[in-house]
Image (cartoon, rainbow, N blue to C red; front, side):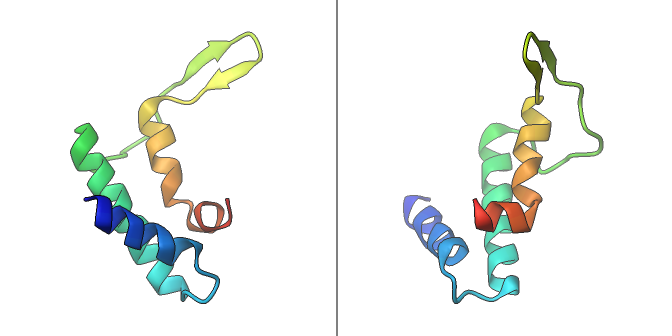
Length: 76
């Protein structure tokens, strides 16, 4: 897993990677993380987060799904 994580991350961060390479790498990472965390890749609807004094904290499921925002994931 560590080698695969490194390779996928390098593809995402490489300015010369194609959009397809980036989205495939992000999808692979999401699927791997979902399997490890027992989320099973299912994000049927956003779950409500927790209200905090300075805003709202995302639920773990919603936070995990944010990796699928390909443009933001590749940029940040």
